[in-house]
Length: 433
Image (cartoon, rainbow, N blue to C red; front, side, top):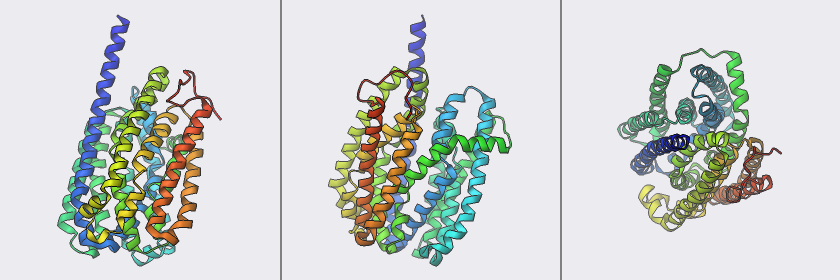
């Protein structure tokens, strides 16, 4: 009888995982469909130079969002997955995380005043800076982390899609000239903020509302610190590369790089819903059923890497057609950039599975952070070395070299711990360095 109940429970969990992944793929499908409509329109209306300014500002906004988000998409998701049966603990967690984000958002706005004086492109185009800050703050207050933790993604998926559709409609109505470039970020931020506000209202219908207190905020900051270090380092070789490139070259060169990066990241994002759906499941299995966690981690690595290899091949072979269709003839210089970046879907699939899906649920935060901090420093050094001389091609090479380093370093770290998911992993608790 006990075995029957266990199988029923396992079947119910599998169905929930499938529903969550399906919901995330619904969001991802929209994330692909809408850019397929908007990017060809924007690149042709704005041109490479203004498109480069939008990408430069958005990359800065993404860095700011990392600071405000403070790694809560990982650390708070993990805590929600552990505490989702207690409304009291969830209420405290929500209050602490939201209070921490308000504090960090205030710091980001203050920092933006300094950035506006230091960075030449923002000094010449301040409206792009503040549009990026607005977009970053809106992006940071998404409650995706909560819904991931409770493994109920359908509502947040629907809200996210509605917000993006509203922003897309605004782009076609309002963006008519290169001088409207900054409005792209403003419209996207408004769509995200709308969906976040509705999601917050739904959350507080099931969890008691509590005002943030300093002890709760402090606890949240302590909880999220290691993941903040991780996300900050990852951002140095992930979301911030257009910003780094814009410090050395013209907006037009940034536009060529950003066009190729958008396509590469779109391919990488095809695997995102699976990763997001598996993370809370592996976090829970590591605590309660280690052999099942080992099996799921091994399967995830094999499947994700295989899918990533197919996407990388598609990026390399289809680069000329993808650039011409999505970006336009004026972006021909993006084709060699995309071909250099073609290995990224494979490398990212392997790195995400080894790092986020396996090391973090095992509690190997410190080892993971060492790798991504080293990777962030390597990417920065390579960008400074290569971007001034080779512009967009040099930046693309720096990103790929860094991602290769990440996969190799994570593999070595897991091998040293005896926790390589492709080998017979120990069933005991993870050892610490």
